[in-house]
Length: 202
Image: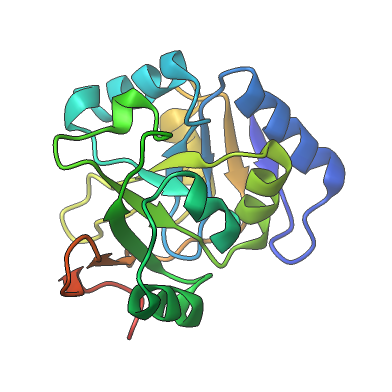
């Protein structure tokens, strides 16, 4: 299903359709404040397996991020965050940043890497943050890559739908996406390190 949702004023009926799909273990492609991403409810193991299969990766090797709707969700899944990191996150989120943080034991086992870390995103996108808020827990997120050698990410939701309509349950059309990924910042040690420069500028 290709579901058009207004980016500034997401309709409640459409939001509810997507939330129910996630609760039923569905896989959805959705817009963020950077690129389109594929994801599912973090607690639905079969859906996670599906995402990994579609992406052609082994689930243990997958670097899925958690998408949260605001900073209050972080403490459920991360160890206590230092003042400096918290100030930085407060200044930059919601926004095009992925923060790598030390995970606590609430993170589902599938995501617990040997390093015990988790990537956290709070995108500045009304559609997906409202879906997460109503779902009540984070989503996993994995970027939609393009096979074109020049363009790394597919930005047109209709083209994404053509490619993935038989593989996922819903593709949300929230307008054209960006083709620049998030900036990744590692905050798991005493030093804050920019791992990848992306759309977010510090």
